[in-house]
Length: 380
Image (tube, rainbow, N blue to C red; front, side):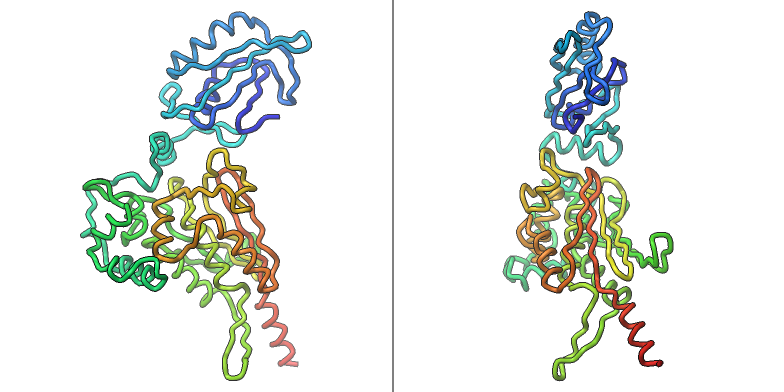
């Protein structure tokens, strides 16, 4: 069947050179000409001419060599084009394509920048940014990092008792005289100057169609998770109050540590090249968090749910969050969320992993319904 690495076409069209380009920029693949969408061999006309023309077209339009092979099954001839993954970004007539799942997509803008960076061993957050100096940053985000790193014992007071510029260098967020994009995202007071859509949008929904109110949280990433959780638990959630002796206990719809883990996961692993914010949709009985993502090549989505093969999409951002004590060893977050929900007698979270979107749905206690019931009993 068609997949990430296999595409079937019944006849040849020159536009299918885009698919070859997409395979070359991904993990390689196989284009079979003369097989219909159901996988049935239907054969090809003028196959001798195609065997001569296709290698030349591939070489002259993209500068690569692919294996073009004649095959035969049940007396019907067809062509298999084997494309290797290439270490550099490949273009077709000045445009770049990338195989994603079973689709072929043109890559432009930030996504193209990231493709080229990754081909040369760099990630989106490791790109150097000219004309920005550490002296232009406010101190607030650095103070948050220093406090968290020391209190979590990931760093010592002596480690953080340096200038902001020296701290960025120690965190591997500089490249010579340049700051890296991760430094701006983590610590600059206005990261949206360099990455549109770096904020978190929170909305309270009565149903899928009716939004009652919303907030946007923006600013340096190192402190965003705390601000998101604070506003959710003060504005969006209602806690049921009970007492154990003289101690007051607020029973919220979902444990704070569980939701915070999900928010941190979305911030650290988000694909910031798309320009889309993180979304948190809150209902009476559920919370849905989703963000753009890129599944690492050759990593099955189900392995992410098992903590296998985790590779941070933004390793520099993830590394700084780790040193601040906000996240643990990579790959444990999903298991911690599951265990936290079950320990609080809530259903395990539901995950949906698509090639470009990661979504978590938590089923929460409907405290609004419980409070309404108590109010009605009191009135009666």
